[in-house]
Amino acid sequence: MTYLVIKWLHVLSSTILFGTGIGSAFYMLLTSLGRDPRTIARVTKLVVLADWLFTTPTAIIQPATGFYLVHLANMPLASRWLAWSIALYVLAIACWLPVVFLQMRLAASARVSAETGGPLTAAYWRMLWIWVALGALAFFAFLGIFWLMVTKLA
Image 1 (cartoon, rainbow, N blue to C red):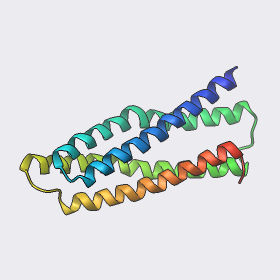
Image 2: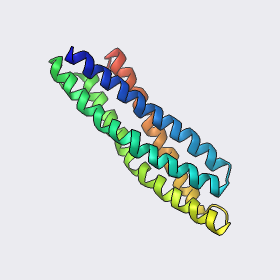
Image 3: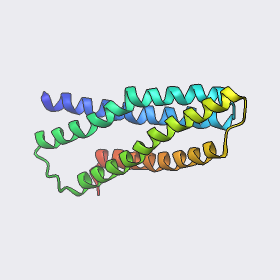
Image 4: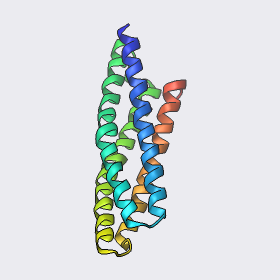
């Protein structure tokens, strides 16, 4: 029974982690392309909040439940599919950490533009495209992890 509960938590937290990431990326990117600093400031502030409320806890729960499942099932950590999954997770989190700080800077930049009535700065757009690139890498890393978790092929 313990294995099933931990597996359920693992699947649930991966769903929340991935879903929050996709939703945040969708709203933040489309809002930014609309170029309205007031709307962008509000949405980026909410995206940062969603990361703290949903992404951060699930990013911690994922490896904790994953390693516990490995322990409960007596799986060797050296399994190729598991080693690749761990490597892809490390890559995804390495992309996500700077994204969180970029989002805070993007929110602050948009807030300044909204308060002054000016357009979004060139720095905003540079940070946004870095945010997009890191997010795309994390997205594909998570797709790879899902494939490996389901198929156990590597």
